[in-house]
Picture 1 (cartoon, one colour):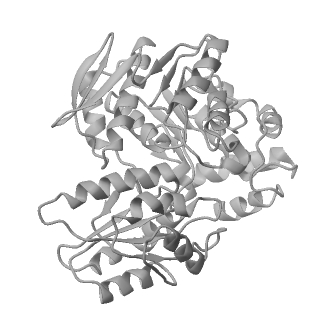
Picture 2 (cartoon, one colour):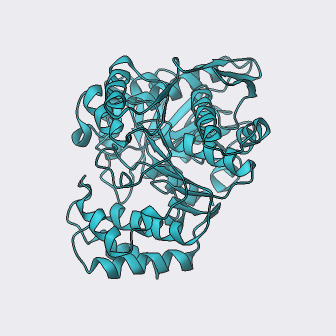
Picture 3 (cartoon, rainbow, N blue to C red):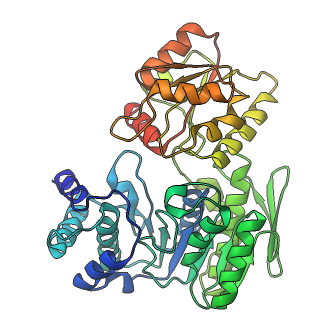
Length: 429
């Protein structure tokens, strides 16, 4: 039943993406303005690291005993993943109820899928008590569907090039869209930024008298042997490495600590022990995730490794390249092979350029149901950056081909798209 409703909602608006707030404001008013009945909100924008930041914040707040609503996108396997109600994935029954209510109130008027499902999430959140709500921006910020809330705290993770056809083709234009989530006098935590982005954010914050808490200015992070050190005027703390893999996760985790510091100022009691517990318990699938069981893993030779990452832009390629360089330093380093698929809206060459130099070869796969490069087109993009590549019909065929033609043991990284990552997780059980 829920799938049927979701299918109907996909057909309500002729455009897949149409950034404006009029439609959601109309529907929210028609269902009783549930976005005004939420607990204190942390609103998160940025290009890279949004989901990880949300995961850290949720883990730390829940470790302190708080009940937390969370809204993220896209989902990997099931739509329910997008809406976490007071710590639990929304149930099928509740999801069906709120989707039906939003659909009936909309009366078949034009509205995007993301807008009507966001209204549904707000309906669920407004009906279940919680102490905190964390909302991830879908795209951009200024005209994003989530930008109808009055947050207690804003956060902006690193800004890079993505969705340029919608947000602009310069960092300044993209940053202006992301900075659109800033609200008058509402504090904002800002992750690591390029100079161009930092200037735009600072100017917008000044217009709104929004206090900024910026990495490298109001707070600092420094990697250490066991993890990292966070320092600000009011807090200095040594912390263990987060459970999520990759050097970039130090920045994401430290940005979460900066958010926790601001929440403490708003009377949230999240102590150092809860921060540490959150770092150790955080989970965020398809972000440099080592697959440890399932049929795809069972097909790997002894001592082989299978990894999954949903990153899909140039900055993500740089992050993955750094991790590949770390892998190469291991005493018995495994050769790296790629299986990748990408949407045609993404810069495949830009993603592959930094990463490709660390891989022996690659296999390109399609992404069914999405506007993706064909395997042949993807291989052409790989060839542009000097990466040897062959097309494959799907992930299973790509994996089988690598195992049959390349020496074992090996490390295989499946990457390039969250949609592909979701397919892999579903196939792997």
